[in-house]
Structure formats: structure tokens, C-alpha cells
Image (cartoon, rainbow, N blue to C red):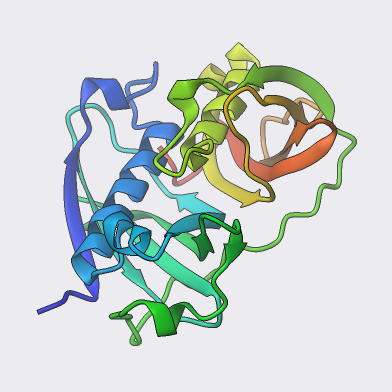
Length: 255
């Protein structure tokens, strides 16, 4: 029997933690991606199944909110499901749990892309079988990001072979790694991440150069601050992202 709700446990191993000995956003996104992959395969529309029709799932938007970050040695459970399909978009939700307590959530939007035309398959429900969850959904969506600040160039990265996924374009998790590498080093010690949101605008491939633009101002110490990012290839956007951060010593329910 197909499971509309999928649960997967992951140990927070040494190679998943950041210098603060906590699960980092890059590692978390990889775990979410893995859980989605396994559930999609279980439901019959994973990579191998979609590839038979020369299609592949492509992430278009993602939003993560975290109340607490697990530490080295913890075990986290990722619970995921798909909402009822609407046109070409599939919305997949996640909950992140530690000791049966929900410590975070995520909502994602995907399209089924034809690998030959590089365009969306307009009627995914007619192409693939789905078991969706209808009794509950994460109470927010991954929305459209509007850049409000005049961003400054912080770093540039050339796409390497190791950045590519099975669809031969840069894996979605790699962009957040580039963002983390663009942030000043002291920020990683002084601030904690409350939320991350990203819109993917265009594909990037091996040999491309991506410039990372970032909000110019330093966050304050008392209120959550929204840092904006933009990835550019030849001056044109490939992604837009926001991070909501707060000083680590400020009063907050996050840890």
C-alpha cells in the first residue's frame, strides 16, 4: 500500500554539522531532498520512473522555517507528503522533528520538466500516479521573492563537475552553500538562522560563472534581519534568496 505520508530518520553525524556542532542549513536541505527522493520513488514517480518519459522533477521554490537546530549526535525525523496537484506544480511539505517534537518545517514547489525541451510538463497528474495528503498542509507557501535592497557583489563561483546532479545542472542545495561561503565569517559565529527561502529562475551548468550578490548592511542585534541574495550569470538572475537571521545571544525560542 502506498504511503501518502513518509517518515525517515537521520542521525546528525559529524559530517552534517557546522562549526557550532549543529545541523547546518546545507545539510538540512540535503536531508529534505533525500526524503523527498525516497518518497517519490515509493509513490512511483521517482527519478527512474520519470526518466522513462524523458522527464525530471525540478525544484522551483523552497521555504524553510526553524524553531531549533539539532546538534551532533541527535537523530532527526523528516516527515513529508505531497499536496493535491494543481496544474504543472507539485507542492511538497516537510516537518522536521526531534524527539517527536516539531522543530521546523518546509514547503517546496516543483515542476515536472521535459529533459529534451527543458520546459514544464503542463499536466503532471495525467503523466504520473499520485497519493496526496488532503487533511493537512504546512500553513505557508514558498512565495515569490522581490529584491528590495541594492545588493553588492560578495563572491563569484565557477560551476564544477561536483556541483552537478543527475539532471546535469547545479543541484539546488549547492546554491545555499555558495551563499554560506559569501557571508562574512564572523556572521556564522554571531547569528543564527531562523528561515531560508529561495526562488530558482534559471539552470546553471558546468563552466558557468555565478556572481553572488548580497544585502550591503550588517544585521542588528535585537530584531530578526532579512538578508537578501541574488545569483547572476552574465548579469541575469539564476536564483533569488532570503535568510532571516538573529543575533545568537538575543532572546528567541530558537537554539
